[in-house]
Length: 80
Image 1 (tube, rainbow, N blue to C red):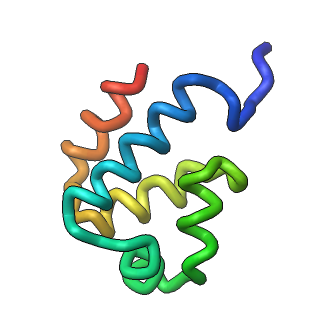
Image 2: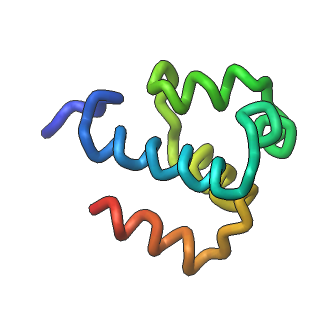
């Protein structure tokens, strides 16, 4: 069994993709945090891999970025 880590290249690629999506929508970390209802440091720490996101966090972020269920699945499929 492999260990879960924020240093896994696939995890880093996922975080980079999320950051890119946020920026494409013209949102700052603070903007996204406000939409999520969390402190801005939540987004900053996630984007710098200081905090590992779980599946619930990921789906909440993608929904906040206006992804529908099909788009969420495609996002995850690209990472595999």
